[in-house]
Image (cartoon, rainbow, N blue to C red; front, side):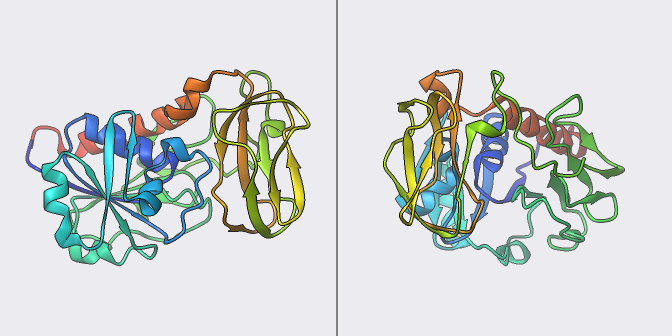
Length: 268
């Protein structure tokens, strides 16, 4: 197969799972874009952390922050993924990738993404907000359930439900949300065991408590957030190893993306 250049918008958990799966499948020319202040909760499995630290390793795959597209070739030579700060995706027209994946997971209608690359660019949208084949070439289902990870070539993903998936019997109560807009001030760390009622963080001066017993799997950085923003995630299974490994949901979505890419380029 010829060398294929892949651009991924977003570098949070879902986008990271996708990039990791593609890199493990020997797609070696991957660049991801992020906003200047990423707000990932599952930071141990998000390449967006490279924006703050310069690099990030997830399950053995390394991503490195780059300042410009011209910096990508040596990163790719090191078998790493490039992370570019470009929230608007302006780099796409300059790069002209073979594959463009929107994994920003904004869950709202984004309109057509076709034409952002070249006529031959494979355009994939992850989750709700995209319709194939008029807006993208393929949509990947992101809702938990029977169709999770399915590649949709005609139609769109299920609407965003707003209801967190159930993990070991816990649903909405495992997710921590900001009670109002303000600055997040964490007082616990990812990987710590917590009990229901423990203070995990403050938003300004307001405490946010754990709703269940478990391990703190995700925690947002100290950053300004709007009201109801997801700021933490408690895993009731209590396995610390889950904090630094990609979730089953993210792996399924990544598998769908890989299928769509191979469907287009297999045999080239």
